[in-house]
Length: 199
Image 1: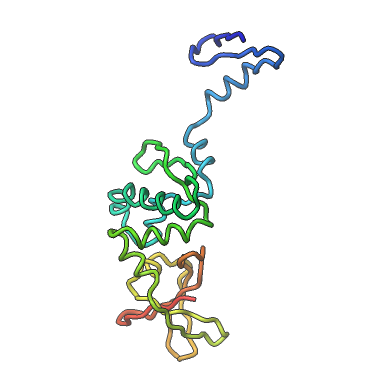
Image 2 (image 1 turned 90 degrees about the vertical axis):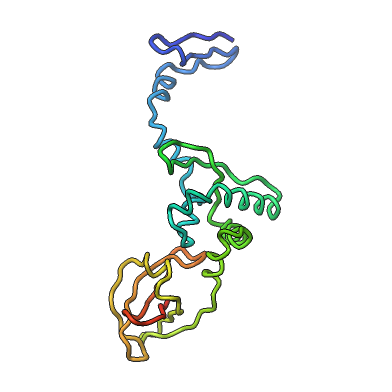
C-alpha cells in the first residue's frame, strides 16, 4: 500500500492498494470542498431529533435547549429497552455547532411518546397530548375533535380560515400536527371560548 500526498493539502492523500484501482485525485479533492452543513443535513433528513420533537410536543425552544439532553437520554434508554437496539445517530446544529445526536424514525414516535410521559419534566406535555377529546361536525360531514384554545396545536395552525359548523357557530379552522399524525384539520372558537376543535 502506497500513500501519495496531494500537493497543497497535507491532510488529503491518494491511496494505492495492491490489486485495486487508485482513488482519483479529483474525487478526493472534491470531497474536501463539500459543505458540511449540507452533508450533515442530508444524513439526518427525515429523522426526528429530540429538540424538534420537544418543540412539536409543546415545549418552548428554551425548555428544549435546557432539558433536551436529559430527555434524550431517557428516550434512548426507552428505545433500548423496547427495541433491544441502539437508536440511530444523526447530526444537529441547534447552537451553531454540529453535534452527533440520537435520531429516530417517524415509526419510533410511540417510543418517544412513552419517554415523554416517563421523564418528570416532560410529563405535563404528555398529559396535554393524551387528554380526552370531544367532537363536533361541519355541515359537510367533517369531524373535529375539541382541544384547549390555548394549546400548542392551535397556536401553530396553518391555513387558518372561518367555517360555520353544524351547530350554527362560526369556528376558525386550519391544519396542525396532532400526536403521531403529521397533519390534521383543526378548528377553534373565537375569543372567549375555552375550546378548540381538531379532526
